[in-house]
Length: 442
Ligand code: SF4
Ligand code: SF4
Image (tube, rainbow, N blue to C red; front, side, top):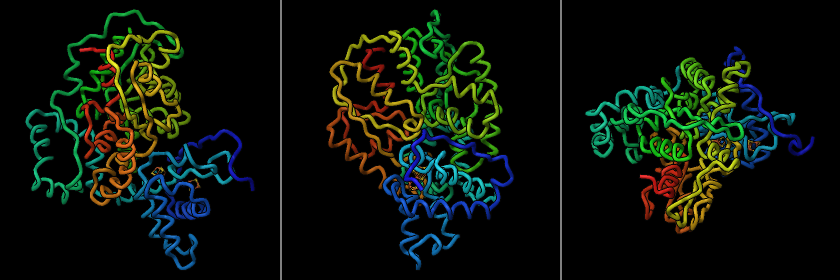
């Protein structure tokens, strides 16, 4: 048996529509097989708490092997996985085509889907992952003010911990009643000639994303301003559901499927009209680039969206390669600590954010490739908040060591998790906002 595969990694389709996917005995047999391989390998021990949980269970068992671990305890490992995909994409030598065929994240996803199907996921987890309801309710003017105030009220936070499972110490995002869609309602895309560059058409439809729309509308506005400054007309999608990533993380694949039915036809309509798709949240881009294509390998529309959706800095890098990026910057940025979110890292596009920010004169960028520990609901839920802070600690200390003037992460949730407790000279924590500042755009 050779150690690791010499061939390029591939990935099998998820196979979630096959009844065998939901067979619990089949799941436990596969968990035992893969846990045993991981126990013999242990490369991933520092990535998250799923692996230390597994290795502790083995080391504390009577046999010191996976066969000594009670099958009921297998779930403890599943509960610590937030599907960042790092173990598959950056560490594991046993992924297909290796004959051991290890796909740890998708095995965890299968376990979560079975749990969800049996109604064993908590109702609070369903609510926390329902960005649609959160967005609709929280963007009402009075409600958003009340929710933001509640986030700072100790008594209400205790109630939220009891009812919603939100740790009383977790920092909650701001909700804006003036959403990105409302702010952009009367704007028309700039009347500019589309100029192709590489695979890009030079016209962008922004998949707004629930988070950018309601929690960080400024980032969406900054993106539009930068892109149009670079001669790229930008419009928003006409209709949109959540990308489905928060539901995927809960194993709620039926809702993922429901969202796909709205999103894919709209994105295909826009692509056929000559628009490329861009989204400012890495997890949403990954959903269309990887997770949906692996759920629907034979759906040509899903595959077409995969080929036409971009991370914002990946898009700007394509333009720069063809000499179409405006490199006249007005302000240097000094020392920037750039955290690479896991869901951007596993897109395998390279450090495009760094490449673009590095074009700004008088700018020094330190790249931090470690998980922030936020990971969707993991960083706010009672029971996992403490662990998420433990994961964030080394990232914070890396930022402190760089003496950076700015801390940025392409993922706004990761940025606020890392920034917690750090004294930073500047308030911008998103690289898109930083680029707007470097251009000197009002
Ligand atoms: S996908 Fe991420 S969270 Fe899950 S086991 Fe792998 S590294 Fe850990
Ligand atoms: S996922 Fe792969 S690299 Fe990580 S511990 Fe398991 S076998 Fe080793």
